[in-house]
Amino acid sequence: KILKFHSFYIDDNEVKTLLEHLISSKQLKLTDEQAKGKRGNENDQETNDKMNTSQTWFEIKKNNIYDNLICKVESSIQEYIQSPFAVVNLNAWKTKANMKVIYDEHGNSRGPNRFHQDGYPPGHYKCMIYLKPLDDDHGKIQVEDKIFESNKGGLCLCFNNNLYHQSIPGKSSERYVIEITVMRTIVKVDILKNYPGTPDSIHLKQAYQAYI
Image (cartoon, rainbow, N blue to C red):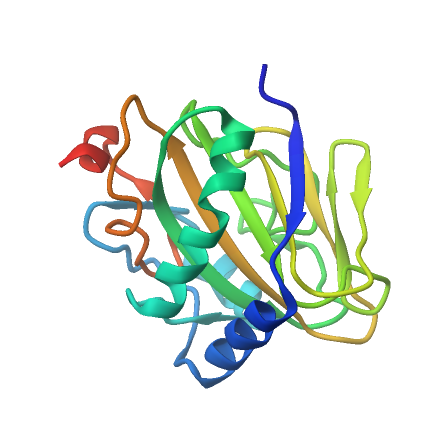
């Protein structure tokens, strides 16, 4: 049986490398542009504009830094989900302190700061990597009734994306996050070929893409 969640740490040098890389990366806004072969969130533009006031996304291209990160966390993720897997998306962003709940044009709450399920197909899991502490200043993460805290950056939290979860905004400092989305596979596949995308990308359009 797969546990609801699993946490571990990457080392401090890896955190430093990732932060430096993100800070030097091209900054992007959330749009409805979707990468080839990927599904997106399908937000309306008004919702994206509201989210862009508090969140800044980083361009994700295949490179050694992300390749090395995925290889370093591979065994921990595989141990947790008890299966080989494909990395079907990688996103990274920073969030301002005191981010409010976003509402779309129909009055529905959107964004990370409210209890929600992601609604991905069965077999998908997330590994969230927090490059800053999880505390009152930088914010925290809650999955069901458990709130995760950490006094240093580098906490990695794996969980089923269809558990109810929410971000808890920080009170004074920006939060830097890397989100790795994985899909369980029947056999071992190349885990490094499908992770690049756009800020709106969430997972592959078709599961068979992981095998080709």
